[in-house]
Image 1 (cartoon, rainbow, N blue to C red):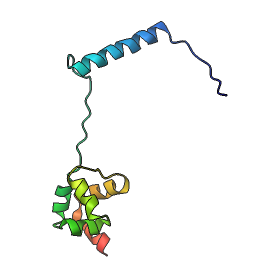
Image 2 (tube, rainbow, N blue to C red):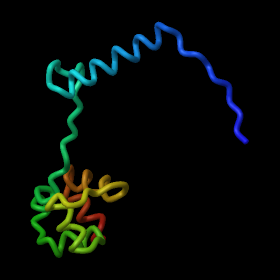
Image 3 (cartoon, one colour):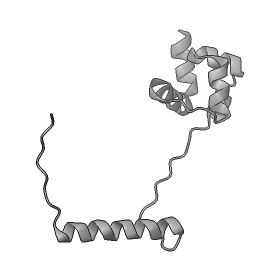
Image 4 (tube, rainbow, N blue to C red):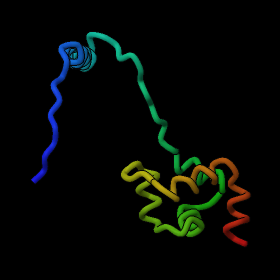
Length: 104
């Protein structure tokens, strides 16, 4: 059995929360602009690969991934994450260095 203490929300906090919800509705309807907008540019995997002058098969082999995975990334059906994302960023910054490290 879980027991926890309920705290009562102050009228001031409730008014702030209500105002935020109202603003969110107006933003969603396009009636007011959001205070901030965050846009994350996805990696252009095909462009990164072109920096290496490798075919899809060669690039997938270099990264030790399947050709299907690479094609999914390039066509936007899937997105790389974790170590693969980090490696792709490094390849983008310095493809010759990564090639030399991975081949030797």
